[in-house]
Length: 256
Image (tube, rainbow, N blue to C red; front, side, top):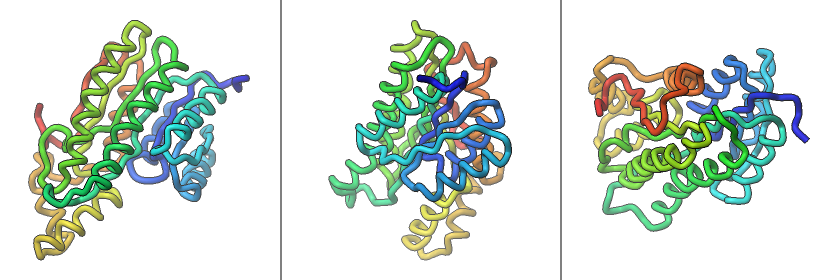
């Protein structure tokens, strides 16, 4: 039996970085937020933060590379209240030159960044009603190739295609499906990327990051709140006629 909760938003990968910021923003927007992550300690921290600000949260530890876990968290969130929003944020990147990507690494990237998005959307849509929203996290890497993350770029490009297919599939039910493509975001994952790239180039991580920021027309590193703001808009009534779109939130790095 459902609790008396009219608006439930699921955020995957909510334990840190972008997902954490999205969970906070949607809680401020009035959603009861089901936060999903493989890290139970991180989930507990986010839950305490949101509830400390007066929000409602349901913490769900899950390994989203496993289909059973995906279905369980979707079903549990739908039992908690009316499932209104799904944000497919969970993902990972591995920096590896094209010729060195192994089958194991390829499969790991594709499973979490692509397979999880597809099946979470499939399972969630069965619980959703008219006006519900699905938002997938793609990347500017899905807009153009990357020599040191070809598998990640391929997965994020496919997320854009899945977004369009799902938008067509669920339009008659009044469910919109969109994607957000962040750029260079100030997160631990970005720090790790530039440590690896710096080592390969013989420069410092700070120099590697500075070179990337120099390519951003707006001239600054993206914040997690920048991404969360775009998600908030796509969940709002103002975005009710937008579906099948992929929104670049990248300071102007990609203009397509």
